[in-house]
Length: 169
Image (tube, one colour):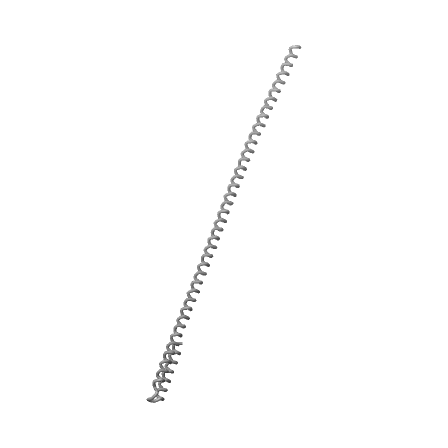
């Protein structure tokens, strides 16, 4: 835009010079005044354009900064969200692992308890069996002794009867 304005200014200047040349010696003062006014007008126009361009540039920069700021905030929010999600996932994973460990421990304890109870039951059964066998052996022994005593007694009685019969004869 500045280049266009400068070209326009040069063109006007050149035209003004030609008009002065055409006018000759006399009456050149008015044209000179018009030329100065034109130059002043052109300068003001240029200043206005420069100011507008500067404002546009500033607005553009401001807009870009604002956009960058917005993008930065958006990025930070996204990162925070991702961190939060990551943290939650990690916590959930840790809770899950803890729960699994607890369940494993409970399972092991239960198995140990069952094994212990089973062992105790077998031990009790073994003891009961041994006691029963001892009892049976004892009873058997007693029966045998009673049988032997009975037999001895019978033999003794028979012997005595025999002796009595022998005496009676």
